[in-house]
Image: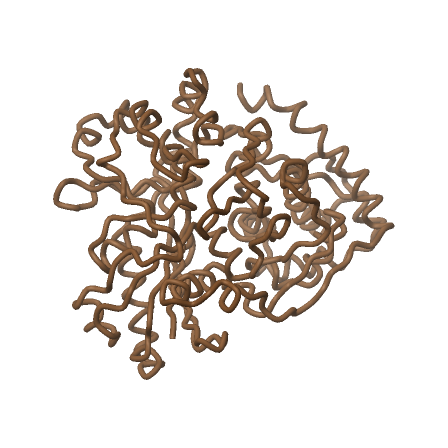
Length: 489
């Protein structure tokens, strides 16, 4: 048995996988986000550990026999968050998360420096990344900054509690802006720009390697074998790629989670910072990937469901699905920048917009506009990736909570002009990937372990719908540049 732990933003997921590729158990524990000020987004790392303890006790109550057969543990998690520890390994403040936008001024300062950050890190300075957060801390909380002995990424705080090791993997470290992504090593130069040193960084361990072994206390509390290995693990999207078995050049997926992601494996290290593309190390040694990220995907639809008075997201999707194509073509356009945006705009001040409202529009039309707008945002990201992916792509897997809706999946296929495939277990892609990385750390081979899960459904673009969605996307495309100065003001 192999345990995958995925520390998401809204939920911590656990998945127990057998060596026959069957999921034996899965559960989730909800998490909440604190937003004490505009643009701030924080969580208490202690809440992550409490959630893990709750989830493990749930599994121990229902699958104690399987847990006693555990061979290894793998970790996946939300990227970029800054977990700050003092010399006694105590948490100094709430962790600033990937969708925290307070460090825009620090990003602008980093962009002016020579040589540019992107020359080493392969990525533009963005508020979501870890390094700008520490520069913000240096300016606004200097006394606390002086006490920082170690900076961990979110999943790596769980590793510390599990096995007492301060470590991370190259895929997650790629999102700090402190990693020389081509060399897969910490950059002293980039760290120095934040008045930090390699001594404050966790050691780097490949995602499929052993990073440490489970401590006696959690093993006893949860009924696990003592000393089982804990794999290096991966950032959530690289882990999802492992879970979906999509690790080759040009292979990848679209993720409809809290954020929206288009992920493509590449034939080498291929940075494209001019388009705000993320070029990161993959979870497996010697591999890289590209990724575009929009900050509000399923979260935009959840916001619309609350705001428009629907009972839940499925009810909103049902209303949007009920529109015929003529009414969809006449719907407003929605810019889904509720938390600012990354790819391709790199603009933390961008805002959501509903454009083209008339007396003829009802809640169903607004619901459709929001879902369509998320698809258009993903399409913007996709077109930044394809030229640099190293190989063309005509099909992608679809993962995340949004993959549960067949109608949404078909609309997304029509919007992107790509075949999309859903898989059994796709909703737990990152947790499955973490479990598979545990299996690899236990001696499994990629050919045996990193397999494509069974296909649940195929969605192929309808040419006529793609044509009129293409026309609507051109109008959508013109809105952001026309409004950008207003957002800044």
